[in-house]
Amino acid sequence: MPNKIRIMIIGGSGAYNFSNEAFGSFKDEVSVSTPYGKVKNIKLFDVDGIKAAFLSRHGVSGYSLTAPFVNYRANIWAAKELGAERILSWTGPGAINNKFKPGDLVIPDDIIDFTKTRPLTFFENTGLGFIRQNPVFCPTLQKTLLEIAKKRHKKVHKNGVYVCTEGPRLETPAEIRFFKQIGADMVGMTLVPEVFLAKELEMCYGTICYITNYAEGIKKMPYKKGVLFEGTLPDKENKLVQKSLTLIPSIIKEVITKLAGTSRTCPCKDAMLRYKRKGQYK
Image 1 (cartoon, rainbow, N blue to C red):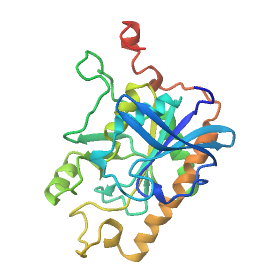
Image 2 (cartoon, rainbow, N blue to C red):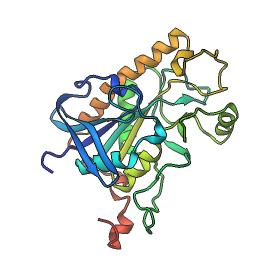
Image 3 (cartoon, helix red, strand yellow):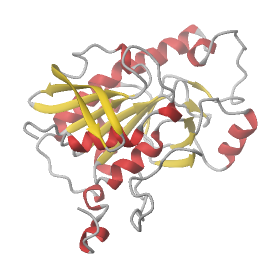
Image 4 (cartoon, rainbow, N blue to C red):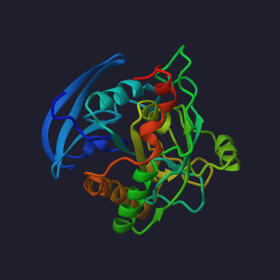
């Protein structure tokens, strides 16, 4: 494919509210056919001379697709098909760790997987797929995200364990107490299997979390009919959440330009080397 992209951006909550120019100079919109279905509405950009693409995980015009029904395999395959070597994403989890507050940014370093029904691999019914998950995220991308985020935001946490639940229902208070006991710092629904699938295709995957709310039972919040997440927060905290979200495009753009022209020295590019040596993976 001519003019391949270098980086795919996968947008989380609120992605559908950003303009076409949020990440760079908008060039085109394409669809990609994959063995797992067609991925539509992929926006192509030029970011200071670097070719990139953007995909809204939950829909184009609004939150139309909840986390358990996202076609993660098709999205990641499309990123590879377009030529991406790196993926940058964001997600909006709830805080379990008492040190995390709504509006904070977190650069996660680990995951606990509590999903139940999602296809987790490209290699079903094969002998492939044994891949180390340490580090879980690309160390180069996470290090750069941390560096840039600290320049733009006052409250950035270097590490955090993200527990991924199935959804679409939210977690019970007892589940949150359990997750806290086993070391989770925040809870969301979208990073699994995205990060694991990217590794299977030897793409770097980095992500930034913006804390949107307190997980159930962490802090006593009023029950409001027809209101969720930020709607239960005081106005001051809600504004902090929105401010953090608006910073994400500029953080991602700077990460892209900073890494432009750099070679990948991380483990991600060789995740399937074991199988390549056996002639099982191309």
